[in-house]
Image 1 (cartoon, helix red, strand yellow):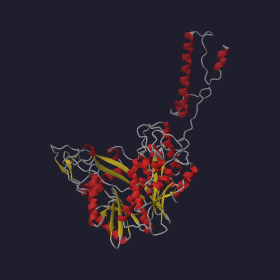
Image 2 (cartoon, one colour):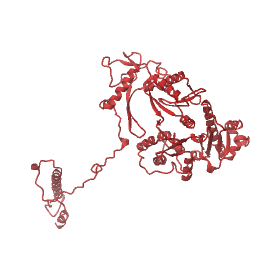
Image 3 (cartoon, one colour):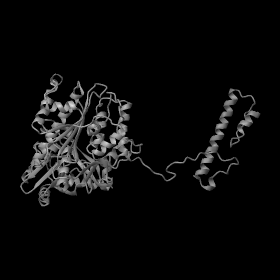
Image 4 (cartoon, one colour):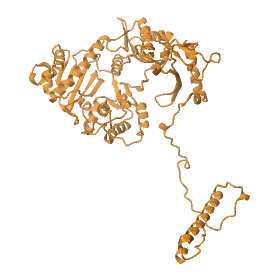
Length: 593
């Protein structure tokens, strides 16, 4: 009994003692049941007294026993701390019913529907008996400003184009968009010539496209016609979601610009030019986002006015935020960055508050061929971040399967971006009126330990500004470092030829022959002399292509020490100090305040 009394004496409730000093199985079970019953009753009494659920006259008298011990959990909400996970919160409705219950989304849907009616997008007709109907749906999106604040609640009615049948509901679908390299080139020219760059946005652009096929669609949910609820929409205009919608809009815009005297360039079909003895004007088109710049501000305004008469335009003024790229104007030029885009990517991958690293990839890091991951978002970030081009190219090579090591490589890129969130590409004025072309190219021979393929890389400058860069695994195995370098220079020469053609169409001249720099002496000799035939006859196409350009003095190839080779960061993971030096020379730096 002494052992039992000593064991139960510290408990806050007086429990019944065993009926016998000898606890057989039956007596032990009876005793255990009595203890549990007493404990449950005390817990309930303590809970009711603590929460004051019962009226004061209904509360039982306080027990003489000490209160039952409780652990008061300290939570963030009790301390007034509320930090919701932003990437789990959706500000867009998930259904039409939910959207119609919110005034701002209902207004957005109404505005879209009325715009469709004003544009004569469809006619209500009885459903056809010989044609298959396609569906439609509402898509909701919050358009944000560069600082993350809400700009507009956008509701868009889209057709379910995946129900269309090729050759019956549509034919051609291809529609070009302007190349990122072309954008950087035009911005460089505008900076050098001190032209203003203005930004335009076309409201409901696709609705302007003419539709040549007979397409029937269900009425939009939430806006069923009360008089003819069983009728269907026979489309007169191209609607978002249709396979041919982008092409129809581009053809309509192409026709309108042609009337104003513009023609598309052969180098980039989405770049339109109007060059006369008195002025030069360029227009860049990326679907419904337009940039316009030129030497004559009055003519630029005339073009904007004429386009606005035909399409509903929104004049956004000087370029500020284009295709997710934030443009900051400085006294020396402009700074291009994707801080908001990268920040959203870091939030989505839960990497926003990680410890940053100084380089996007570890030197001599080996990645297996088994890899599968969605890295398209990182690819888009390279538009203004050439410093991550090589590392993104490396992780993109393993799209079929991935291991833990590959995830670590992707996370390292994200950690690097987290530490350089506001870095971007800086474009500046040229010190002279001419824009000379300069390129650096390199190759890392047999760098892939899995298949011994080499990696090519180059960077191309127009005046002081980096406008084009490249990092890619070569398709064939090179038998020597010279062969790998020559394949790389052939790629750069092709890019220079394209750039020269574009500048010629834009009526921009260069005072000198383009110069390229290579750290392999054999490649320099081969470019001008027919030597080492036995070792190079299997790459004769690249040899003759480059040599012809050199002999015709359309390009120069010079040697540069490896320590001054800027293309190193596009072919290999370089050490920290070297990487930071090259990054600065590529004009990738922090955004100005």
